[in-house]
Length: 197
Image (cartoon, rainbow, N blue to C red; front, side, top):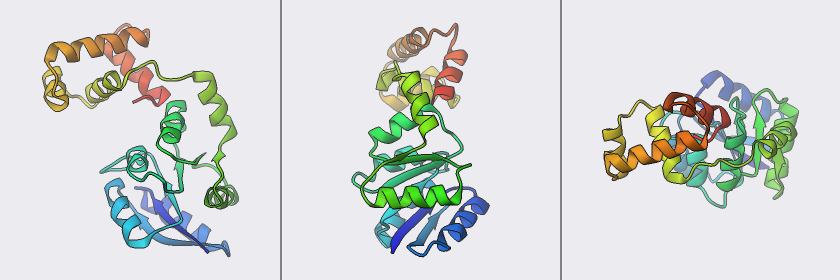
């Protein structure tokens, strides 16, 4: 029996997924989480074989959760199928990534393949990620742009990242230039659309 943990902030979707997976003879849902910051404790308590994560969750997003669970069999199931998300997920050790509009049979097949040590990537998303290329942003540029996207001021970003305000402005300026954007807002939108922040 493959023990599955489901993490999705949308209660109805999470419950529906659990019910669908319970129809599979070899799968059982041992835990469900509605917040990303609940997943680590649930993993410790239930020791699932495969963890199915949504990306957008309160507390911690699915990619951050994945980064904190190295060596675990993980699958991202998300509405947000941006090329940068796939690259970040793979870098975090995630072995599967499929869109939420996949069939229950595809989800079950992905869980089985990941449990067996394989990978399961949506082919269309994999092709998009290859065509999009890697993010041109450094980690610091990405962090400053992400904080700016959340509405933080230059002073707030500087305080949170332990940088000077001038350094933050430089990182933001570099990010804008690298993304070929005329301003910070356009750079943020482009980076979000690509899944780089």
